[in-house]
Picture: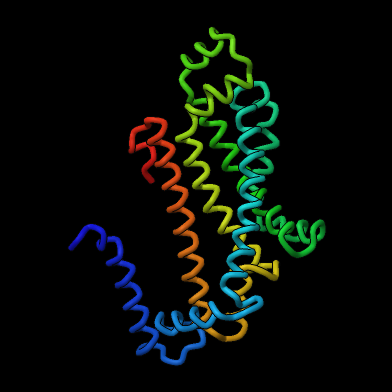
Length: 258
């Protein structure tokens, strides 16, 4: 079997088993539909309008997730650099971080609804909170793992703190930062869909809930598969960008592997 086809064997087997189970073990079920019917329902959703439109719902989710990830990643990167460079600042912020970090992001949905109402702002604020913490912790750890000799060279050259951060620290941290970014991307999509399922009337999560409440298991399964496809495509794009930047910087291929 060609190597390019091997990763597809197991998913195809699962789809065939699900098709057989839905058709012969639980025919006419309101909870599960054959993948073939889900594919047809997805085709109908592609031409639909309003909340059931694939393009509109996907756009809503991706915009919310991207805005939240951008805000959370920017704050996490800046504060992670600060805490990584200053032991005193890390010690002062330790208690606050350890108290706030375990708070589930979905627990903020009622507060976000009161402050922002429904829509993009409510959703991306929750996503930003969820993605801030892993970016903060991993950035701080990446700073601590930079070779001390690099910092000594920076001091010997008389570089300013900004020059040390941008010319020495960030290039040395880049492989680890991409790992943090890939984790943040996954969290952003998961939290965005979760917020839509729980509260926000928009996006792919909300469309899947509408299908469930309408007793349309084929459409619900179609949305579930589509969310998985979108997540896979985003992760693949992030990994490709990571490998491209690693090649330009002369990093080993292993640094950019999943």
